[in-house]
Image 1 (cartoon, each protein chain N blue to C red):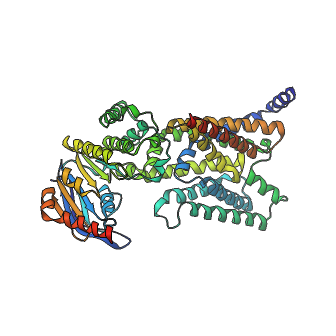
Image 2 (cartoon, each protein chain N blue to C red):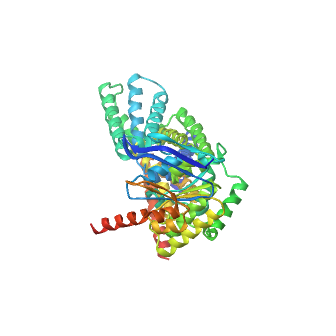
Length: 237
Length: 282
């Protein structure tokens, strides 16, 4: 069975549907890129998959040994985080909180694993630094390390490269791709159709026209051109 | 100087003053603990809101002629805290507006009740005491001292036990929820702890000045320290220091306890801000 199956989903707020009858599934090791215009419901879809938002119809099911709490999540930055006094180490280890249950403190194994994840993200040297003083790219690495503490199976990334400069963006994509090669399933929301086609195995386009399939098929179908063209029109209009 | 020492020695001969000092320090410690979380959750004014609710409840207790006000004050304040903090994003009237509404509403009703059902000969004196705290530390009763001591120890223990959970819930609520932390439960616990702290602190500084006790130490610590742990420890130490020196000053110069403590807190904030600026310039 697939790790994640969305069956005939309808999503929306206060009785107004944004997405109707959406079905797709994600297998272990996939790299799914979700693209679509602003307001097409990408973030709502992600929140539904995480169980933060309930669908109006349809259902999300998890399989292949994945439970809902085992999904690592890289959210978009919130205002609160910009002036939060917290060290990198404190943030990374908080990824284990969900597994602690009532246990008040982190154990030695969790501390070691947090250090391991910081090494993997190349932020080991920053662990005592204050989060709000880091650059955008470094902050994303910190949040990615935290997400890795929460999961070994699936990562959901909400526009991980927004606000980063091109060089750091390319770094970030490589990093995510290397995680995918280690066997972690990736689901990423993105505006960047080029990157989607370069790295992703599957593409889900939501909006007026819905497409779900392999990245190559998406390229062949000409959807990408329609999508890119429409963006262009909007920019000119 | 000798005169001051003599005065202090004289006062501290009464066990009563010693108890009051201990309680003042304990309350200051508790109220500073959650300050960081509340400032960051944009709930700096929750102290004000809840203390006005406590004021209203106290007025009701006085009208009903209850000897132990805590029976009404504590539950009412806890319920309001839960409504304000735990209802969170779903509420129709949110954050600052909800706090402001409950705060002024309770204040008005409380004062109205105290005036209409005039039970004491000195209404304005009573009101002033509840709003700005006891005019002298000597007016704290022994029962109040013991209740404060027990509850403050409880609050500190709860805070230490839930420290890591409070951190994750404050830093990133949706991540915590998505990865299986019981966010609603911990928000509820934070709300209950803060309500208890408010009711305790009312005895010391009065309803109007509680916010100062909650946010000043946290804001001062945030000028200098960079991690959640160091900010929390620093604000706790700072708050204890300010409360202790405030109480001593108020004994020596016979000033009102609450406002003296807050004045010391303000001075500390100024000093910390300067140090922070200086460090940035380096």
